Amino acid sequence: MSDLPGGRSISTRFRILVEIASRQPSVQQKDVARELGITVQAVSERIKELVSAGLVVSRGRASYAVTPTGVDWLLRHARELESYSERISRIVRDISVTAALADTDLAAGERVALEMRDGILRARPWRTGDPTTGHAAAHAEAGSDVGITRIEGIIPLSVAETVVAMVPVVREQGSRRVDTPRLRLLAQQIGFTAAIGVEALVALRLAGVEPDTRWAAAAAVVEAASAGVSCLLVCTESDLPAVSERLNQAGLLFSVVDLSL
Image (tube, rainbow, N blue to C red; front, side):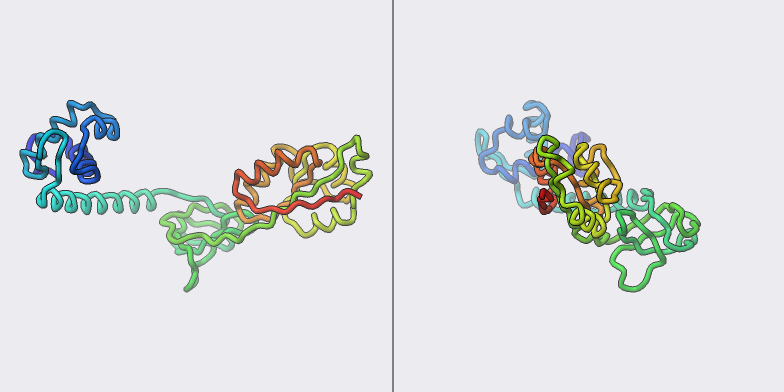
């Protein structure tokens, strides 16, 4: 990008040329300056340089257009920027390391397949047809953590089931009015269980279930469900509006079950 006279920032001129192309023929310098976060004087000076270089033509006050030469220049440098951006992406991908759990012994540099299982990213030897690949950064034994580099593809992630189970508040007899067998069955069918409030905790314990978490339960469910883990969140009816709002904000699909007797 050194063929423009003046020796100034080519990136700024490139961006100004893009703004002119998108706004022509009516181009207000103050609008360009505001968009790029620079002064109007700087925009004026760069436009003069672009006109002098034959990349832009001025047709009167606040009237500019990109010339055919300017279009060629813009396309050529856009391709250079795209190539440079791709190179940066490759470099960052190659040097970045993601942690995974080794399903089997892995050799350093071995090509691996990645999958999300039980909410944990796992690595195993690659097989033809696997949609996501990477390379083990170092030797790892089965069951240990391993660094994965040069990841390509999209990791398959199944949609997790999220169930919100309502129980009565204590002033309405709380856990004493819960359908305990149904709650037990739900917990047995789902991978992660969370409780909000004493009523929910006691109801689960009466069903023979110890919740995986009682703190930041809604946030924990969002994290678990986002990793493909099915979730059961037990709460009182009074907590349901806040829980529903939190899950909706996270974009989770969920069903509500009333366990009151």
